[in-house]
Image (cartoon, rainbow, N blue to C red):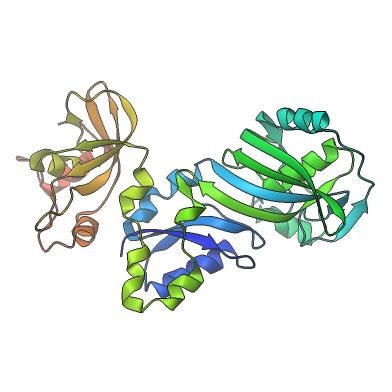
Length: 334
């Protein structure tokens, strides 16, 4: 099976636990997710199955949008509600002007120090392993971008909280952003709520839940999958004829009148029957009229996706042996 499941990850499950549960429900063999969510976090977690795993990196790199709640005046050892309270300070009066200034200060290009409770590795060991052993290791700040930030003061359970929505670049830790906002206000903070509402073009409104999958008859669960090309919705689309498609799948560059493009989704003729859509072949980029292969699907993957008994285009160019054909996998021009 090949496709993308947009999962609304529940609170309390790790991203891998959620992946394994869905993999079992869908009887899938090959699967991966596109960006870890903490167990306490909920929201959009795209899961890739089969051929879709070849393009999962695209959404690891995508911008992401979160809703969060930071409890002001209380710092914890982990930056969220799972940790132990390590300090408490009074929360000062905060004016609308101060809140607006804070919003502007934390929007744009920033440097962020990764938290100790994270999966980043130091000398082959995850930082959270050092943290659990009580060891604080030196970390380098990382460049991140907060594209958009909306802040609002509120009260929950008798405590002042900062509600915020943030659209951020990959590698941004929202727990750390919440802590930094609290420090900027002079009182510290920790996250009590975190929900990812979008990753790339996928928003939470399109997601399904594990409970919904479990409630469906097994034979109907695959209907929740998006096609593999859903991961390539922001790529320029190029369609090739049968001959060019076969050569492209062989790793050969194709020449044409296409404008330069950094991200291209390449399709070939349908291998299915009836009104089957064009077959996704893989990704590429265009430079000076050359279509240069990137990540390619295998002919077997294409056949399975299209549900066709006919083989996908896999022609070895005339005059080439199989060994010569293999040498072209680096994208040589024919």
